[in-house]
Amino acid sequence: MKLLSFLVLTIHFLNINAQIEALFNLKRFKSIDENYIETYLYIYGNTLKTNLDTSKVTKGVEILQYIENSNKDIVAYKKYIIEEKADYVESKGIMDLQRFALKNDKYNIFVEINDINDGSNIEKHNEEFELNFNNEIVFSDIELLESYWKDAENTESTNELTKSGFHMVPLVTNYFGPDFEKMAYYFEIYGMDNYYKDSRLLLKQSIVISGSEEIAGQYNKIKKIATNNIQPILNTFDLSNLPTGNYDLKIELVNSMNEVIISTLLPFQRTNLSNNMKIDRLNAVQINNTFAAYLNQDSLTDFLECLSPLATNLERNIIDKKILNMNDTLKKQFMFSFWYNRNPNNPSSEWEKYKKAVKKTDQLFATKVRRGFETDRGRIYLKYGPPNTITDRPNEPSAYPYQIWHYYKIGKFNNKRFIFYMPDLGSNEYSILHSNLQGEFFNNNWKVDLHRRNTPGRSVDNDQNPNDDQWGSNSNIFFINP
Image (cartoon, rainbow, N blue to C red; front, top):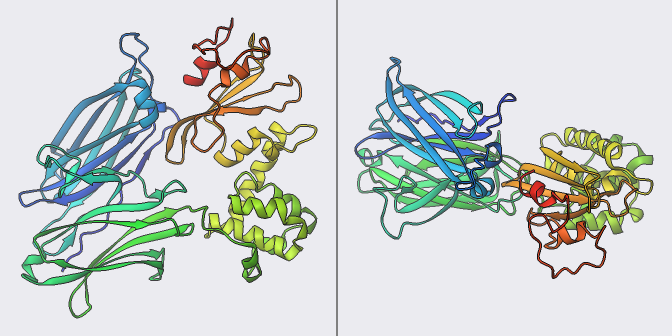
C-alpha cells in the first residue's frame, strides 16, 4: 500500500530588500468529492506600513495566489485584500487560510504579498508540490494547530477554518519555543474501508528523538480506530516535560498482526527552559571530551555569572547562592548542563555564540561598576537578541535620556517594546522603565517617571495624555510607533 510522501512547506519570506516578513505553509487533504490543498499564510504586522488617514488608521495586504499544473496551465487563482485596524494588525499579525480544489498532478504555487500602503513593499514566493491521492490507504499531511474549539453552530460548509466539527487555527511553524506548553495537530486517514471494512486498526502516535526510533519518555499513544473511508484524527501532546531538542512526531497505522500499514514523520524543534538540572544531579553529568572540560578554570565563576540573563529561577538560584561553594568540576558540569538543555545537538556552539554576545554587551552597556550583562539593557540584549530598531533620545526637553527598543517578534509574541532611561544623567546606566512584553517589568506610570526631571513632585494620579503635558515630549508617540 502506498504512503503519501511527507511534505513540509514552512517558508520564511525574508528579503533584505523588502520589509514584509511572513511564514507560508501548505497541507494536502481530500474529501469524498475532491482533493484539495490548504495554504496558511502568517504576516508579521510590524513589517507593514500604516495608513495614517485619520478616518481609517489601518494596515493591510493584497495577496495573490495562483497554481500551475504540470502543463503550465493556471488551474487556480485568487486575488484578495485583507485590511484591519492598525493596532490589531500590530499585535495579532495577519493570518490567512485558503483552500484550492485540485486533481492528482504535479503543481507549482505562486504567492505574492503586496503592502497596500507601500507599493514598493512586495514579497514573492513559489513552491512545487504534488497531489497523488488514490484508493489506497494514505495519510493527509499533518496540520499543526495554534488553537482549536468545537464548532457548536455546525458552520463547516461555510467556514474554511473548520474541519470535522472543529474550528482550527493553523500554527505556521514547526518550532515549539518556551512559550508553548502543548502540541496540537490534525490529520486524516483515507481508504481504510477498501481493505479493512467493518474492523478496527491500531493508530500509534508518538514523539521520537530525531534520527532514531527511541520514544521520548512517555510520549506515546495507542488507540483503536474505525476503518472509515475518511477518518479524522485530532490529538494533543503536553510538551511541558519534553526537553530541548530535535524530534519527530511519528504516526503509524498498524494491523492486527502488528504490521505497519503506513507511517509518516513530522520533524519539529523544541526549546524547554523549565526542564533543567538540579544541583544534586550535576555529579552524574559526564563532561569528558566536551567543551566544558577545557574551560579556563580562572574564568569559570565569570562564565557562570554571565549566564544569569538566560537562566531559569532554579538556575539563577544556583548561580547566585551556591556558585562560591562549587568546585571547578561541578562548575564545568553546570556549564555543560546549561547549554545542553538549550541545544543538545551542539552545546559548544551555543556557548561560543553567547560568549561573543556577552563581550558585545560589555562594549555597549558596561559602566564603571557593572559589566554589560549585569545592566538592564545587557540582560534584554542577551535574552532576546538585538532589537530590530532603537529610538535614542538623549536630549529631549523635559525627559531623562531614554531609549526605546522595538522587537518585531519575541518567541510567539509580536511587536514588543522596552523603554530604558538614565535618571542620573551621566553614568550610561539605562534602567528599564517599562515593557509591554508579558513577564517583563510593567510600569503603568512610566511617562510620569520619565518626566520627573522637570516635575519631581508630580503625582501619579495625574492623567497621562499622549504628550504627557510636557513641551517637546515625544516618548508616547515613539513608544506606540517607534
